[in-house]
Image 1: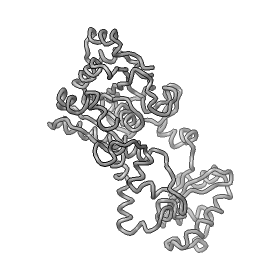
Image 2: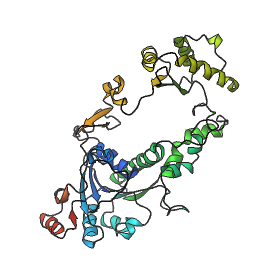
Image 3: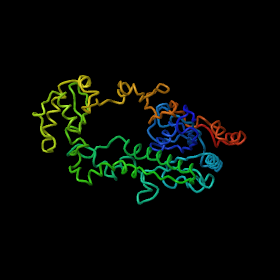
Image 4: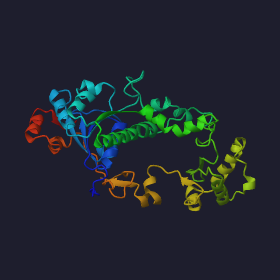
Length: 388
């Protein structure tokens, strides 16, 4: 029987080359599931993103960090020794950076033929844009996804970077890594996983592109069923200035919503005709403006009206449903999302607080199998130390 306390990925050994955004998110997902993830940080402060106190750098949780000077051959040799003991390596640099460090797929797979070498970039490892810089907004712009987000008659609305960086990037890489590990463990060889945010964002748009291709997404931005165009799939302002969301796409659920709102179906426009959408929206907006968000919650939550309050990040952990499911946890005084999904036989462990870059030092190297003498040499030569 597997160790139920260790998570479904207990025993998986992962090297993470410290970076920003989506690659650390993928490493967090593996660590959340019990993988032993060793983060390789730079000896100097990297300035790799929006700075915050270590304990709030949630994507760095549940793993140890060692700072290794990769500008020195001893540092490269140290990482290659770790590669020989690893199942997975994760890197999120521009194409060619790992090769210049002497840590590209060639030497790493030579050292460990069963290694899964995970690469995460915005544009991918090849293509006309591969060498250029970019961020989430640029990648989703190239897929059509950004063009579809926003209100009718308004420019596209930049969404939070969850769509590109974390959904189309980090999660895509985590999925690819687990696929490749499964293949390696069932007799296959190691391989390179090329995860590009532009590919992942395009993949996430597959259902909507299907609607578009079938002629069921006929409107421009903000004029369709799932983009806020339909009055029955939108958010409405309440009497207290807070918002609620309604999404009764199905006719039977719309009928229930109207009944609970006290709106006679005979007085509500036929929303199968898009020409009636503005009038229907006005009726719903006027009704929701009559009561506070909490009053609407008391009436509508838990029904089949497809309703939920629009909560802030500060409010969400305290909602009764999220509280009952343990959707959020508190680690070292910091409230954060719990690991997901859930497993009946091998539940993941409680996340551990992020540590400072390089904090684990040579102790982590010893735990990964490097000799005490080797670790002492690396420490004396200042190849390994604390970042900062």
